[in-house]
Amino acid sequence: MFNNDFWKKTNIADESRYKAIKYLILLVFLFLTCRLVQLQIIDYRSYYARAESQTIKQRTVTPIRGVLYDRKGKLIVQNIPTYSVTLTPYDFKKETMPLLIKIIPELDSNNIYTLIKQKEDKKELRLPFKISRDVNENTIFRLVEYLDKLPGIDLVVDSKRVYDFDCNMSHILGYVREITADLLKKYPYYEQGNMIGVSGLEENYEHILRGRNGIHFVLVDQYGRQVDSFANREYDIKPQNGSALNLSIDIELQGLAEKLLTGRRGSVVAMDPNNGEIIICANKPDYDPSLFSGIVPYDIYNKLNTDESNPLLSRATQSRYPPGSTWKMLIALAALQEGIITDKSTIACNGGYTIGGRTWRCHGCGALSVRNALRSSCNTFFCDLGVRLGIDRFEKYGSMFNFGTKTQIDLPFESKGLLPSKVYYDTTFPGTKNLGGRMANLGIGQGELLCTPLQMAAYTATIANGGTYYQPHIVKSVINSATGKVENIHWDSKKIPINPYYFNVVKDGMWSVVNAGGTASGVYISGLNVCGKTGTAQNSKGRDHSWFVCFAPKDNPQIAMCVFVENAGFGSVVAAPIAKRILQKFFGREPESIVIPIEDVEDPEETENIGYDIE
Image (cartoon, rainbow, N blue to C red; front, side, top):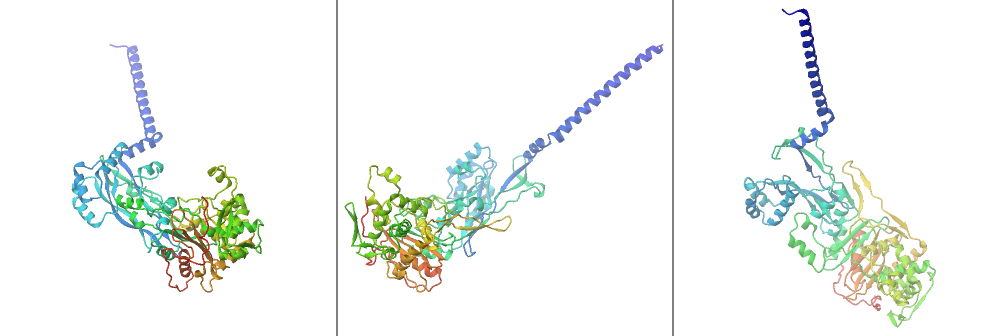
């Protein structure tokens, strides 16, 4: 028999084991509870994101690109739905390539394999990319018929730009194309297959027109294939469509200007002198922007790029030419402001101006005041003023009107032209001490001086309004797609530090050019008081260039314009009639029958193409 001491010892041992097991269980439970707290609360986001990445994928939703309206509110650029073909590398079978090429012959198999390799390197084999855009109806039918034999190939709804106007306007608009590999590196916001604006307004306002991508969350299986939308699309982020642009371009006047330039190389730029809005910006030769709205065949781009007439060049903003006698108003303003002459001063013209053994011929105009010198475009008068101004003051006043710099128009790839200076001549022609002959040449807008038609239009507009230089621009306002509100854009302006009276003197001279027997009498329009100036710029590589600048009416100007035509001869014969036809359209006058010759003709009233250029 066991005594009481034995039972007491046994009970104590059992109780100790019980407590030990109880604490062990409690410890395990506590550990599991802590681990659960860590998984469910502390590390929740990390594990949730990891789990989501295995079952939920996000797809980019491309927004609708912003549309464009002209100055009268007409919709001129919009989007229409179309179909594109995509390829998903993970599912695609190389042995189906011959069938794919047979259905879409314009595809390049080598290019497709290159893109597949790029996707493989980026570990994006499950992401589709576009291999053909804007496929035609026949291709769609054939593709649908064989889709079951083309794994990895799909048709998706896409969009493309369409243009609703009777002209090209290609250098203003630019175009939209699929983003390139180089641009993808530069702009990580985009994805392969996204469209991006190239050149013109499409490029300059890309950040406004493109909108903001949306995100569509989808459920995928273990093979990465979409099986359903996630949470009934509750967490999707809707795309924000691109905002619309209100342009200052008058599409009817733009079309007329392009027609008047047909068969020529040149430009017409017209603007509102009261605010800098561009009304016309026409260039010829040009191209049809709809050619670039889908996949651009190489032969089309190569043909445009190698064309000797250079249709891809915006002559209004990128080409540089000597302005000829259209420069004489600036010389007059500078000489008046500097006190070199007054509006009553006269300079005698006996048939030419001679300096340094060179002569700039003229018609023997007699003693002329500045107003009459502008009317007859007297070379003697302005050669003399150029020499008396000197290079430093020449540069000073040229800079006031932004010559030698970009106008900062809202288009890419603008040229700044060339405004010669003392530094320029010291660098380009070292050792030249006497600039007298060069200054005579610069006084009549010849020599090293180079300007764009856009610069000349802005300069003419500044004279028209009496001395305020407005930054030229094409976009008036933005229609915000998120708020629906019209948001105006601020554009710069500056007051030219020249006595307003001298602008009136120059305007008197320009009025007489058109209305009092001057070199542009053919532009006369009854009751309109057009002010203008012809120009014939000598060209060492061919026939002279034809210029005409103008504004109307004189006292309350509503339009200022520059017409430039390469190798067309006298400004009064070719450029001026183009301007007259546009002015008639702008002011609602019944157009007259005007024949604008392409070939050079003699004009006894033109006095500008009779000088000598300095080598």
